[in-house]
Image 1: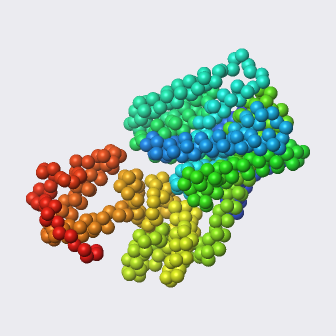
Image 2: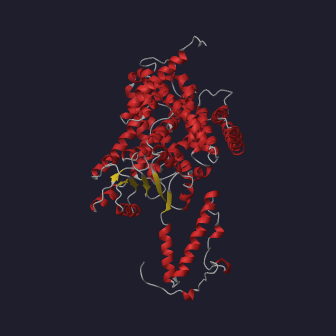
Image 3: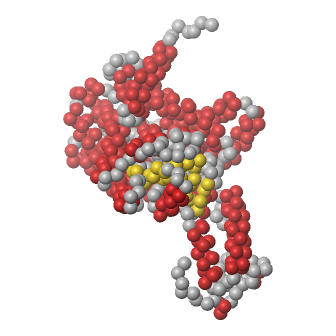
Length: 605
């Protein structure tokens, strides 16, 4: 069978693949990140250097579906309830970030350039948005996407994606050449609500039955086609209303997050996402016109400094005000300091509306691209500063640890007890904690603890997770999630994983997790305290044992109901209620006692 005479597409495909294979692994080996490798590969093969590919805009238009699929996968990981739990970060921190960064960049441009206030405002708001594709890929590479830091950063990105609609409305309103056919601002708003409402309804009532029908056929390729239809269809619906395709895919993903087919859909989409996202970064690198940078290096440097400096400062301060520590605040700032892909859309609209000259638009586009290229380096620099801070405290990283059969993450009071029991059996343990103060204190007592974030795959690999048999999470809070655990299990299938759960909610979240044991951190100690209280009230030992057994049975039954429904109020009738108890709420044959029967016992337990 003969192949058509035009082999340009095949040749370009070979160029893209060869450049990626040659350059990306090198950057990964140098620990500079795969994203920067894709950007540099695109610069090299693009029209401004070797000229092996001459039409980066066409590639970029196609590769934007990588961003669409990325947002779809993120949506799959955020169930509607979890999304509601993030409303504080999305609408509070996210809105503050967009507005304050936009106004701060506008002020900086008015002070340092001769732009009109209309042009400065549009540019400032456009540059306030960051690159979701770039940032999320970096978070994925570092294993941080499901950490509290990663969740907060993604929440801000979601608000930025929502902000593109009002931003386009502002750009249209300030345009000096409004076209008669241009839609009114309120028209765009109601269309947005219509499109989002249609996606929500389709996801709620159509998608799950559709996938159930496809699954019944037992045909794998049809399931893949259905997943792609879900992504492309949601993107097309939003694009037809002039809205963000990525936002539409994200909403579709959220609607599918509670579906039993979520994991299979994610597995089918992931290969396409990875390929198209890499192509997207290469296309961004190809658009970087080095001649513009060389002709106006001072202006571009000024724009890059304003962009990165203002956004980093504002975002870091905001993150601190919203409860992050200074380290995470700095990381949040550096992750979100770059310009984003939506800036290209807004700059084009501003140029069409005569708010911005073509040359200025090109300079800002170059500044955005440079900021994206610098982001992996800046993040690596901040990470190294954090490591240097650890070095200043005379702490070592897990690379200095000898491989042990067990890795314990979080060496606080809980972790110390677990380590004592393992040590009593002679089982060597590699101890990891991310608090230099705790590591120092442990060292004074002769215990070697290594500095690192044990939820990160690279840290676990360095600590010897590929050879270990046990991975024990004793860190406090809710740092471990289903998604993080799934990534750990995929990467290190040989490990048995034990997790300290923060509370009942955390247990419910981890119920589908593939781990050996989930332990509620205060449950057993609370039961012991309850036994001590009953003993102090002079309840006999046999009755105390019966009460404990009854309580444990009811608690297990209630937890099973909560897990099955996801509702904390499930099984409420199994609890004993508030004091005083109704007559029928006792423990059957176990008698209740009156207040007068309680005798104070001042002994400590």
